[in-house]
Amino acid sequence: MIVAFSVAPSGNGNPDGSVHDAVAAAVAVVRGSGLPHRTTSMFTEIEGEWDEVMAVVKGAVDAVQRFGSRVSLVLKADIRPGYTGEIDGKIERLESALESIRPQEGSQTTIPE
Image 1 (tube, rainbow, N blue to C red):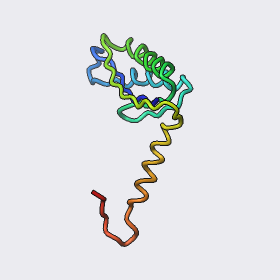
Image 2 (tube, rainbow, N blue to C red):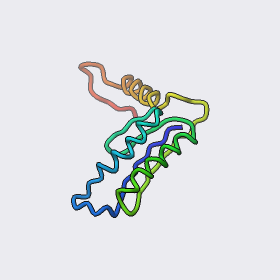
Image 3 (cartoon, rainbow, N blue to C red):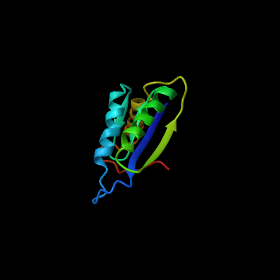
Image 4 (tube, helix red, strand yellow):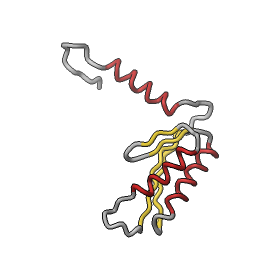
């Protein structure tokens, strides 16, 4: 499975609203897990078996808990038994599909409907 999640504290009293220290604590948990992962500006994706992925998400929530009185967790999961390497495979297939619809040099851009 692949899980995309975002975790952040609230009620932290930080005047500028920044949560980067809390997010760094969560990302450190993910990176320490040894599971395939990717972090972007809005979400962290992690791939593995159900129990191991959910244990990492729980660890990330626990790491953020100390930064505020509450924790917000947003989670989306792609559960596809029997498949691994999809954290990169999905992106590779997308790039291949985009390459097939890119206009040839000198032609006008048209996107199939």
